[in-house]
Length: 607
Ligand SMILES: *[C@@H]1O[C@H](CO)[C@@H](O)[C@H](O)[C@H]1NC(C)=O
Ligand SMILES: *[C@@H]1O[C@H](CO)[C@@H](O)[C@H](O)[C@H]1NC(C)=O
Ligand SMILES: *[C@@H]1O[C@H](CO)[C@@H](O)[C@H](O)[C@H]1NC(C)=O
Ligand SMILES: *[C@@H]1O[C@H](CO)[C@@H](O)[C@H](O)[C@H]1NC(C)=O
Ligand SMILES: *[C@@H]1O[C@H](CO)[C@@H](O)[C@H](O)[C@H]1NC(C)=O
Ligand SMILES: *[C@@H]1O[C@H](CO)[C@@H](O)[C@H](O)[C@H]1NC(C)=O
Image 1 (cartoon, helix red, strand yellow):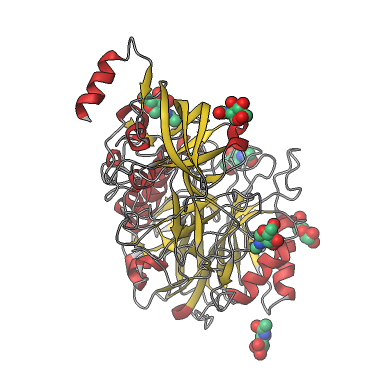
Image 2 (cartoon, protein in one colour):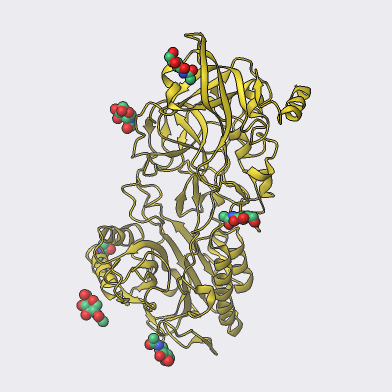
């Protein structure tokens, strides 16, 4: 075969038609076909499935090389009526590499099929069972040899799959594994949903193969150097039915049979028919927090919650209030992110959020015993990023029967807070370096100094909402390592924020500092590592010994992941505790109130 390939390559300038190739020869052992753009004749295969725009054939001359798929997609609806599942056919066609965006991997397919000849009909069509002895399950940690060990490798976009076209290593790399099955009809036994459906009903699943990162809810958590390539997304069924909209994280599903295909930048399984939910995890809603305040300095409770563009008018405000009142048990101090201004999306220069916050406070009071007070600093109109007109900002809710601001002296939108000897804060509350380019188009960290009502116990807080991942490329995309959108901004923001905290701790190494919020980043990626290194703070997850796989507040694609963090200074580590309350990641797509889960901490701030 090697000789034949070479001969064809050298002759290809004159001979554009390649005869009697097998499908595995067309696919080859790399991402891109050696025959891209060439005409092929007499390609023989068994029709395994039909879609609305083409059909799939599996070679009748199977290669045992696990790198080369034996199946391929024949694109074009005009030939659909010429074939029936179970036919063995030959056809002439052109080999094509197709993608709808330069950020995606290519799909190797046959186009412009002609001369379809049905050789026999009614042949058995047997899917390949994934995870059995013949084809192992997918690799569980790495996506591509080009990632250099980590999808979060820096620098990103050092190469592309399409330019390097590496030889497939399906036992090591997720992209290679799924590519080696391109066009193949497979069965996944006893799958578990590891996401809820997107708006098209597409749902990420894992099979009953080896899985790393599995959490108690049966989702898969992204951890350092393990971004879960063993999951695959199930797309629109080939028979025109729709996948259920109510699938939940961890649901047990009926076996899935479908075609593996690269579409929209991901390896999909296009199932023959829609997903069936067999059972969901119990209980359906998470337990309320076990971390209850005693309202004394030794056991105060803190929460951080990104409430997703909360305006006074939105339907979800009473539900957010319910989460704080019930699931979080009215913590003494709540770090909120994404509090919108009083007129929400209207872009008219209003930046105040009194109405938003008092509406939330009243709703919490109606559902609990606590009437919170709030502290925040309004931003400059339209300069802090986020959805247009909302002017989202961080804010604190605090229980005024337990805590108060220490010497309140609110800063304004442009004043930069300063650490004074003591340590004390010049502005309380105040923002960190609002004019620093690190925070262009992003939220400024909100600092505050607090004390218990007897004035004896002082502590500091920083409420963070770092720049988003907007502008990144897909985890299964062409750029390797994928571009982690906004990472330079988050590095700069982490540096400025950590410098400020380091100044507090330089004044008093035993100062009590609590930093919480939505950092839009994972603990094992540069911005968070820099933050810890400069600030000298501790990750509360580590202090409290939370298992790696239970550290999640967000569900994105296949991954349970942690964008929200709480950090504490080293004088407060004794008996420090944290819980993540999965009110949103465990809910249905329609039932989720915010895209983030809240967290609760119990901490000792006694002098
Ligand atoms: C499909 O069948 C029709 C009718 O026999 C024939 O004219 C046409 O060429 C066939 N199409 C292909 C792609 O072979
Ligand atoms: C990735 O790098 C290439 C080559 O330097 C560049 O042309 C391309 O624009 C980059 N991709 C993105 C999405 O930034
Ligand atoms: C699956 O598709 C069938 C046929 O359209 C439909 O009756 C059924 O409700 C679908 N199942 C789910 C869970 O949506
Ligand atoms: C804040 O809003 C509440 C509720 O609408 C209102 O009673 C209060 O007067 C407002 N306070 C300020 C300072 O605007
Ligand atoms: C309100 O406070 C009372 C008395 O302290 C307590 O018995 C009750 O359980 C509290 N209710 C709520 C909803 O926290
Ligand atoms: C913010 O406060 C500073 C210092 O008090 C003052 O100079 C500045 O004009 C204020 N800016 C705004 C927007 O109020």
